[in-house]
Length: 436
Ligand code: PFF
Image (cartoon, rainbow, N blue to C red):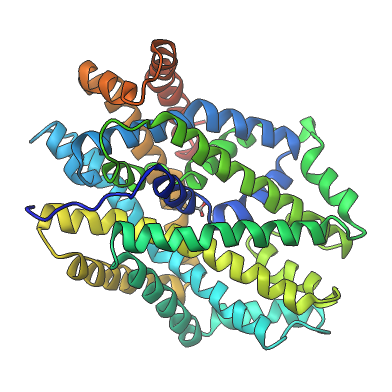
């Protein structure tokens, strides 16, 4: 407890690290196909509404709690309501992060394997079946998958062990600008292919008939996952903020950056998918099976594949380090462990807990469903209720106003966090519990 807490070097480092957390596999893979299946631009509009009405307010609530207590998510709730049942609101996000990383690192391992496949030019001239087979081979050969999973987890630990400014911040300062440059490069290439018009139309023209009540719920779930909300990450990242800095503008930048990357990824992926008449709603295989099929047929396809998978590995790694940090911060703050002990110990245990996801696709899917459908929404609901109704008015107001925010903005946020966010999240939860 006596250890000095790490801090961001400034707002820029903080914003970049939080964008690094938010921008991940959720943006590049999940957003594209969910938007494709749920009415294109119609979904995108609803998604933007969810980000503005629920995502940003809950993110702000997390920053505010973390910055106020200067503790990890478990410690924050214990400090604010000692000995009360609200401690559960801290344990739940920490547990969610634990589970997320266990299977997220498995996908991170796939990405590393695909970097090697790109380097060895394994897609060129191959049929769609052969390329699909590469993915099946990997996911059914326990040992190879386990190896790549271990390498990805090791990379995550190596960054986190270096601490807030030296590891998390520096890692993101390198990875995020490169990711953006690579994404723009691929985008410029993709929009010149024959399928560009059809691909862009697929994502950007609204098909209102395909937008169902379920799509609205999908949009909300996607906003949670994509913004890294309710996993304790934003509480932890807020705790590394110095007092008296503005929390509101960063929340808008982070949500804006995350949404921009999701949209650009879609605009890059769909033109390629349409150019080669591939299936735009292929789901998990879209990135690992469909897209390499496109790369196999494109001029300079090997280079494109390599750039794409390196980009994806940065997105996955920069998110994974934030997820590990959320749990490691608990070990450091609450158990008094050294950063090195907490990171290696917790990283090792999360790796072991991910092994069942290597071995069974069913287990992998179960972990994913439990987190996205139940743990994250419940955590977000508790955070919204706590910040809106339980936290003292003085603390809430003071923390929100720290960067010179107006009373009107505060009142607007309070309305969203007290009424809009809890009602919207409770509706999702009810739906995912199949209550209606
Ligand atoms: N936001 C990251 C993505 O979009 O891939 C992943 C993520 C991080 C999801 C943390 C959930 C979470 F709690």
